[in-house]
Image (cartoon, one colour):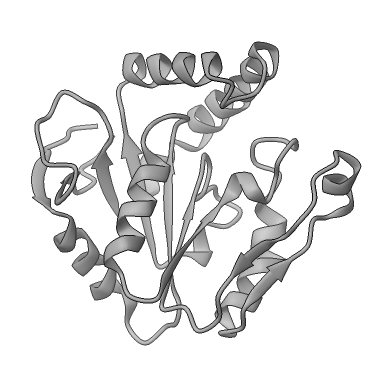
Length: 208
């Protein structure tokens, strides 16, 4: 990718989301990227500045499943409820319960913006469900360093499970090249100076 990064206000990024919204409610935004690229942080920051907004983590739909096995759940069971303006209280599928996971995924009704974040958030099987797709671009050394810290802290699965996860992730990104289908790129690394409280580093997609 040929990237021309620029530092802009976080509110400018929020304005971009508002611009693409049109009359569709809620506007559904995908925040995709590699593991430890900064997706969750960006999604949370966006929700903080967008009105009536919420985050949906794909990990919450497919815990202990394949990395990308949540797509049917999102497309067929979650988004129809959200698009109808209804509150979501999505109970665990049977395979959740088999792994001792309880509770449900909840979202308030009448959302204006829903940010769906996770590895593969904009995979081809659900890409048409979004109004805007953001790819978080972060260099591999930074991502791997973050992964190692998270593994050491117990925030991620065992090293064996992590290896399997990364094999799936790398196969997906090699096959689909998801950054090429994004509307906007956001920098998630640490070598460009910006104020993380008020700014974000962005680039329009300019080719492979």
